[in-house]
Image 1 (cartoon, rainbow, N blue to C red):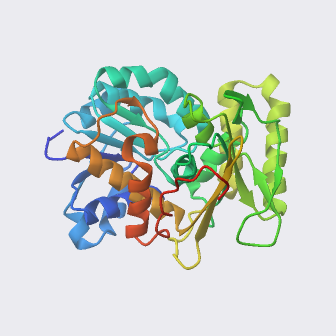
Image 2: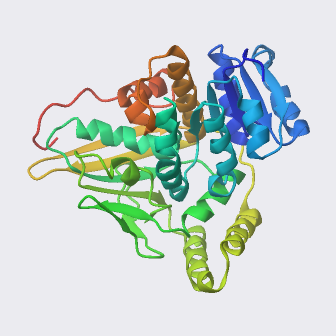
Length: 376
């Protein structure tokens, strides 16, 4: 590949890939729009504003390690937007490592994040590159709220609730049905502990009176980010929904999966969740900042104090595009000193990412830095 393009967006023709391309181009960054289907790539790039199209070069590629490594050769950053990541991610991250590229993705799948950490983290560190999965609304936004809470040195326990306010894309639907049927973790006394199968909790969000249903939704990345962080003892993450048929259907799917699992192969189980997703998945309309409102609540405490962080925003998929673009900007600028497996806040800075969301009109300005160790 020509060295004129430092960034490869793999999976560029999808819903999230389109947003990422737009935001990269708006920041003046050139990139390769890559994927498996030339026609879909041409259609996706074709609807970009004319000024943005000039920043994109279309490159169809076969989804295998060798072909992807050849495409990534000469680039600095691979942005992987092709999910489900647990099914499709291995050749992409292997090829990124082969080509000595930084690796970013938009996954929400916690089994994939653990695979990235445990299988690839050390290898990326050896070549002075980062592997940063989940640089997306889920699960970066919750970590940013956690980091604000942790500015109070007396805090060690984090209870996080997402209320996204946007319908999932086709790829996200396939991913979340993988997530809710896999082992879902919370951090309890510094140990990753599985949620009970089919768990749900009642949730009181700060902005409405209705009691919502909270699902572990894969467990969230925050327990993984903080498992080895000496500041944190406990971390729990759920996603809040209005009670209704969809929540009941998801819980029923987890029950059916658990019943079927002992007699089926991994490939058969993956096909089962794919079939469920295909039955309900649709491409949602582009987000409307006045309609698709998100709320992120982090209630945190320590032995003798507590703090609550609430982040009000809009358009989670647009937030994902903003996170990815800022990550690429920092990597290209040479400001990043970390290497190996890293979390979004660890490598790009919690307040910096929050400021980016605010500057893009996607979230309220970040709260002022908190220094008191008493209840806030």
